[in-house]
Image (cartoon, rainbow, N blue to C red; front, side, top):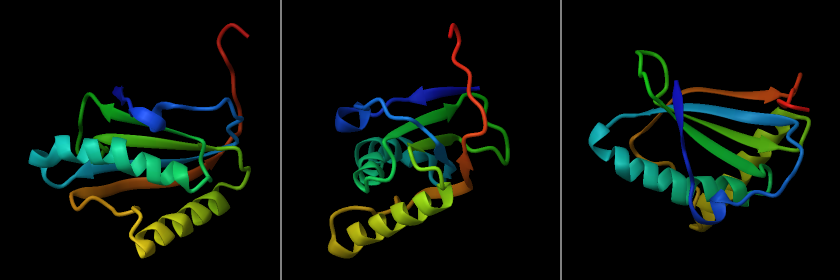
Length: 130
């Protein structure tokens, strides 16, 4: 089970856009003593960095409530209107690299450990009550 870790500020705002593909990231942190620091960085800096590339229009994070070995403690979904998830991720990575190169953000927290990542395109959808 997972609980949502809600971003604050601009990262919490979302315009109604179609989601055609997502980037899924699952991470753990190497130093549990830095859990609070890591979450503050992710919610206040990293989500905004990713969204500011203009590739993704919505970012949500979730925390695993029943941690197991090999399963990430945190997962994130980055939603985009683009239909090619691989191209979207490539463009986002280029944007993040440009931020790092110019000193405007895009850095990775030292305690982050990526467990799983993948690009997914929409293959079905159903909204309750519709």
